[in-house]
Every structure is written in C-alpha cells, then in structure tokens.
Length: 299
Length: 235
Image (cartoon, rainbow over all chains, first blue to last red; front, side, top):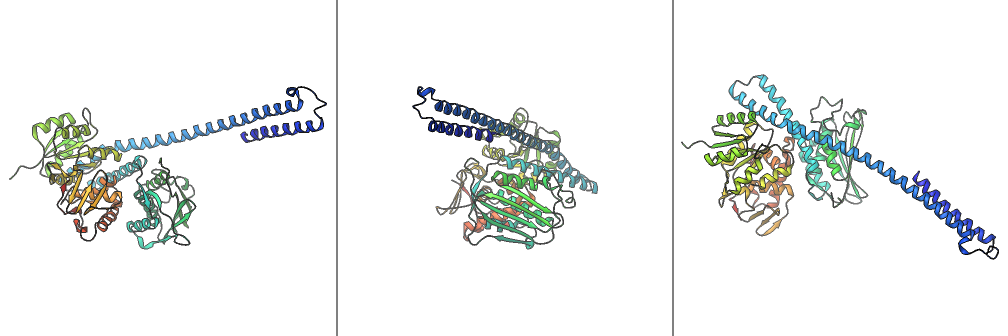
C-alpha cells in the first residue's frame, strides 16, 4: 500500500514532466506568448509535482502507521514476556522460605527419630522442589547478569564440553578446519559452555546411539549443530520445547527440570543468535545454534 | 573445656529460625536468635557472638544494612548471609559490604553448619579477614581482587574470569577445604549439582597457568573439594 502510493507519486511526476516536454516541443514558445508563470507546460510540471508530493507523503504516512502498529504489537509481546518472567521470579522467592523451613525441620526430625521411609520420601520431594527453585533462579539470573565477553575458540570449548558430559564415548566432535578454520567468537564463555552442554546432554539423554556435534563457519556467524538419532520430539511439542517447565509428551520417563532448553534459548538470545530445533519422531533431532562472531558494543 | 561457639541467628521467619537453632544446638553450638537487624545489633553488643547468620530481607533493618553498620563500627565478626535475593549482583554487593559468605535459600542445616565451621577457622590478616583484603600474596604469587589480575614473580598471568574467581576464593580461605558446590555457588552464582565438573575444569586451568612449581598450592581433597595450602598475606 505505502509502496504503491510512493510509486504512483513518482509516476505522476515523471508523466507530468514528459507531458510538459512534449507540449513544449509540439507548441513552440512563440505561439504561446504568456508570461513564464502561466506557461501551460510549467503549470503541468507544478501540478504534477504537487500531486506527486501528496502521494509520496501519503505513502510515508501509511508506512509510519504500519510501523507504529508493529511497534505496539512488539511492545505488547515484550510486556507479556516481562510479566511472565516477573511471575516466575516471585514464585521462586515465595517458594524459598517455606522450603528452607521444611528442609531444616526435616533434618531435625531425622535426627530425633528413626528415619522412616515417610521422612525419606518427603525429603526427596523437598529436594525436587529445591532443584526447581535453583533452576528458576538461574533462569532469572540469565536475564540480568552482564555478559562477560571474551574471545572463545569453539574447538577448545567443545573439547571442554565433552569433558563435562556423562557419556562422552557416544559423542563425536566435528569442527571445521579446512579450507579455513573457524575464527574465534566473542562470547560469554561459561554461558556458551552451559548452552552447548545442555544440548549435548539432551541428545545423549534421549538417545542410545551416537551423538554428533558439528561446528561450521558461516558468513559472519558460527553454526553449531547437535545431532542425535534418538526418539525425537513430537510435532505438537516442537514449538513449545523451549518454554519454561514444558516437557514433551514422550519425555516424562526421563528425569529433567523442564528448564534446560529455556536456558539455552536465553543464552543464545543474549548473544544475538538463534536456536532452531528440527526433529522427526523415531529418527532423531537436530538442534542448531547460530551465533554472530561479534557482539554489538551495547549488549 | 573451652565454651562452645556462640552463633547469632537472624531471620524474621520463625520456622526457619527455631529450626536452625535446634539443628545448631544439636551440632554443639550455643545460639542466640533475633528477628531483625536492630535486635541483632543489640545482641552483638551484649554477647559478642562468634559467627552471625543473617537473612537479607527483614523488616526494620535488613541484612545488608546490618552488615554495613557492624563493619563501619569496626566489628569483624564473621557473617554468613542467608540470601533470598536471586540476582548475582546482590550477592556480590553483600560480599563487598563485608559479609564473609552467603548461602542461598533453600539450604539444609548441614550445609549451614559446614559453612559456620569454616568461618570459625577463618584466617585474619592484619586484623581483618583475608576474605575482605584487596590484595593477597603467597610467596611469588600475587592476586589483586578489584582489577582481577594475578602475577607470578611480578609477571602477569592471564586467567579466565571464573578461574580468577576460584583462585581468589580459595586464597582468601587458606587451608580451608572448599567444596565444589560452594565454589559454584560463590563464583558462578548458581549451585547446579550437574555442573560440578565445571569447577574441575577451572582448577585445571589455574594449575596449568601457575606452572609445575606452584600448581601444588591448590590441593585436591578427594571427595571434599579443594584448598589453598600456601601461607597468605594481605598486600
């Protein structure tokens, strides 16, 4: 719409000028001996210019309005997002004190009486809740802590990641070395390590076969793919797997916090990158990280 | 037999305070209880406790202000903050204002007892706890907290941020065993039990960069954690 108006305006201007030139050529000035201002050719050009200005202006106005609508939609989405995060943070705060009291009093009970299975069960459940609050806190921290940027060699970082995994023998690393090596990336080393470890952990957890981690150099960005041949993610779950506390329908038999991918998503977003997950149930999953090599100064 | 250490517990939550008091008494400590910072300051004056366990969010006078007032008055009683605030910035602020340690809620009583025992062994350097000194030296090794720099024989070595944090934490507590959980909690700002090997990776980095002659300054205590075994001086 906006573009059409602008084009129409420019076309009017061009047509006006062409008409004026044709007129001038067809009717020699000697015949039309009005003053320059009343010269029909000049009038035509002025009229065309006015119409063109109005059309181009209208185009700009429509564009501005569209941008405004888009901005307010984005602002609404951001506000909802912020609200959800505040809620989760408050929930975390409100859980902590009662959980501390429960844990401390359980210690006291256990010391006073023979530790019956009932107390053990309650403790296990309290521990689960504690783990959840720790995860929520970490997620909130990821929003607020400043990034500690340094130059990171992805090959080194992946070696480090492999050291941290439970079953590294199922993992193969494939880092591009030819025809050129991957340049270093500017990133928060620990956060990036955490994100990669999370993806590799997931791949190992939800599969029994080999897991491959590939790193490639794209123009201006680093690409890391974590590939498994495991059970995969159901199509209905796929759009939601990176939401906090979401667990896939076919994932309930494997223990997990439901926060891992949400964490990866935050880390990647804070680095200005993107996370994409493709999956086929029964075939496997490919998690792709794309991260810009350089960070804008303001981030 | 010397008197058992006196611990001042400060928390506005009755269930936590009385539960912790029972646990600490069972562990052989004497306890005092306060519901807020003002009560705590009065009890510190009257009884000079050996360690203070202090909640942050409290009515009347909160934990951070309580620490600030104690330290301004020249009182260096070891303090462990029972923090309920998520942001790492808050923790760092508490440490800078003079708290010695902090423990994230929820925690269990055994963790608090272990931290209190470590604080009772805290080393003082020139009348102040080493945890609060700006510069620490041990033989040829020198560490400057604020600028995050480390030198060996005057030659600067490059450590990653987290490796620096680990070294500073251990050096501030010479001869005290620090668990991996504790290092994760204090240096990384989160206590992720699956991330414990992350600590080992940073310890390996520190040892590598200290070189073969100084690597032994960091001792691995199997099943428990790490400790710095050199003599540490402030300045």
